[in-house]
Image (tube, rainbow, N blue to C red; front, side):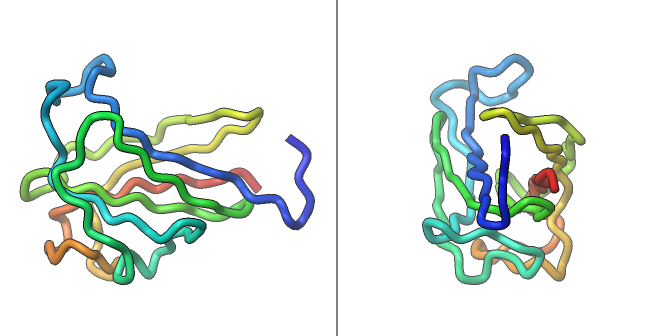
Length: 129
């Protein structure tokens, strides 16, 4: 994937409750996610201006644009804690790959849900340079 200085990656998070190892049933929902306006990337300042979507169903997808070397953030809340942190994992598509990991949301990262630090899972996608 040849990129110049104007290159941007589109990264989408899609919920798939039918994936192997998923603890959700296909008709279940996830409590909350913060969705940035189209074309906006989240940063470590967080999701203060994002929209709180609730009762997220299987197949829900949200996308962000990011430049090489940038970290994109996706936030999910389901229950009152983020104890099942995961990663790093390698994700890819379109000839590029990135690493992603999940951790409890730290206090400095703003939220749109009103939940306290550690009650939401923050997925961090590190884009290739």
